[in-house]
Image (cartoon, rainbow, N blue to C red; front, side, top):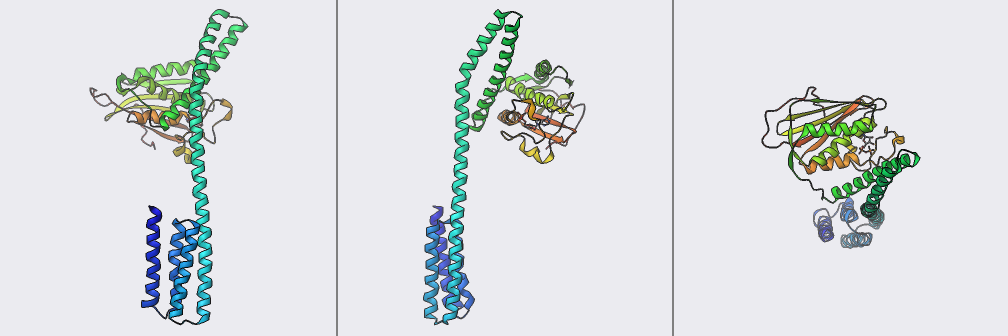
Length: 349
Ligand code: ADP
């Protein structure tokens, strides 16, 4: 359809060039350059062979009109040479454009295949991991406190980590397929945040995690999914602390939104990378490689979950000063007056 429209346009431009050449400017020798216009338009949209045909037609039109107007041979030769050069360049341009489009399609297909493979692999890994987890727990219970007990603990921890990676991969494919489902139910946000903080504290014994809690805030959403987001923000705040972690969490109500803010004083995110950190598989240039396990999926999934709730996540950060992530969620209808956070920072992007 697009090709047909372009052909009509090219035909009209060729016709216009001929009319101007014959009827409007019959003596102007520069009028031959008008024939280059349809050739260049063809090069932008059409295949190389069609561009070559348009080029030949343009030359034919010019030579016929030059014959009728009895133009000097030198002028004809000059115009012919110019049109041939332009035609050649137009064919090359069209060829390169075609190759670029082909490469982009191949890259898109490769990405699609990768995502499909990851999704299938994650599904397939789920069952053996569940069995492995159950067996390890059984082993841990029967092994007692000796060396085999410690080994069972280590295997259990690693299986847990693999399980989280697999769940992350499945969440990514759900989000990319637009199929992340959340059940909207009222829940008290402050208590959910407290639970997430307790869980994070277990895995980060040296971290200073403080909750500046106000009154209760009733949000609407999937409590488990929201805790997944908060847990991820807290884990990141600890992992990217660049030393002893100091993390401050606040929960408050703002207009028709519930807000959770997680602020740290860690390594921060370079300003130019801020718009990218929510993209899948993106890790900051300053993110240490030695922490292991990071696939750069956590923030992508967190944003997907927030958006599935009709909410959003905003971030503000400065390298070497720290980061502030803010999760906005819809409130339940029967909520009280707005509350304010103890510390207000409005500079979130
Ligand atoms: P991962 O932590 O697995 O790399 P995420 O999607 O959770 O994946 O984070 C993406 C990137 O964003 C991280 O690699 C890191 O560079 C940056 N980032 C996220 N949270 C923070 C934070 N609190 N402080 C500094 N950098 C962060």
